[in-house]
Image (cartoon, rainbow, N blue to C red; front, side, top):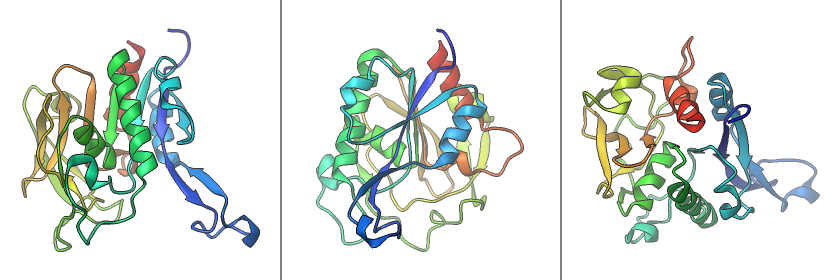
Length: 235
């Protein structure tokens, strides 16, 4: 491979009005929104980030990207995993669901590595046929400021996650949904004290999902999960 591995990064679609952009005449314009911290993690690991607008054809990316990063964000439509919506659901983006699931189809066909963060781990699970808990009770510790290290994740010995972090890692927590039924083809390799699934790894693909936000962890060193993604993309 010549040059840095190209890592596709997904984002969100918002209107200018939702972002309080001026002037008011722009309020109905649609914008693709991407968080820079994901790109910074990829750059620090030696990759070249490529933001993926949701209006593009996901099939066009399959052979052009070297790796894929599914980012955090809105709730997945419960119909995608056969559930009726609960009253506590947050914002949903059906078009984003379709786009990211199609990106995973492409990554599966080409063998490209995938990292799923927060919503991303949930997209991996739903893509494989798994289900989600639609709402974590508000008294739980899973909706905290991004720079707060709030709980420990214990990692399975011999797993990819343990090779990156050791036997455990203390993490932030910014989610109100979690994995319920695990998709076929995955293993749970990290859990929190309350039993929340925090890490999944595909058995036969270079696909890894984490429930926390490594791009927001306050650390002197870059997070090793981005190193893994870029190394796998370069292989």
